[in-house]
Amino acid sequence: MKKIDVCLSPDLIELYDLNNKVVVIVDVLRASSTMITALANGVSQIRPFSHVSACQAMRRSGYLIAGERGGDIIDGFDLGNSPLSFLNEKYFGENLAMTTTNGTLAIKLSQKAFKVIIGGIINLDAVAAYLKAQDKDVVVFCAAWKGKVNLEDTLFAGALVDLLTDEFEAECDAPIVARAVYREAKDDIIGYLKNSSHVNRLKKLGIEKDIEFCLTPNKFSVVPELEGDDILLK
Ligand code: MLT
Image (tube, rainbow, N blue to C red; front, side, top):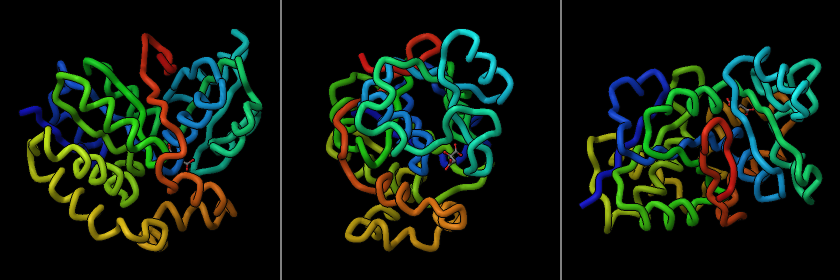
């Protein structure tokens, strides 16, 4: 049987062997949801960066520059980190360079993986189908918040474990914990997360619309994949 593991924070990733595994990067609020939405709406490719200056330098290569720190758009950037900005194919055919507090960092920490894909509640079923079709073990890598565990990424990991339970066995206790969170939350995901730390952070910034969008299951059926330096749809 294939194995599934869950890494609840980038600070724990050194404990996981990513060799020959498919890594699912999840940052439900909001980096992975923004990437999925942008690519599903025609953005050609997204290059992730951990550092602001390296991201900004991509403007010279014709890339649009997007990102946040603390949830807010970075000064001088074209776009922040809202999935809603990319709806209606507004940036069709554009290349995007992106840096976020946690999401793009998690991608950078996954270079040893066999494959890196991008998951969120908005493409949950498509990610599950993709993983079922692969003959590889899986690590769900939660971007979390500055090293601390968060509820929404854990919930997504648990939803995936739940969908894959017939074909994958848990490699440690983290998938079991995540699945228990999902099972408790599944009938009212938005209500369950209403007091979570990043939901509150985004509410303070007045970004409620993003929360509802990012927590709505299966808006898209695409599975973004890292190829070389860029994330794209294959
Ligand atoms: C991150 O990468 O930490 C997030 O996507 C933050 C945000 O909500 O913009």
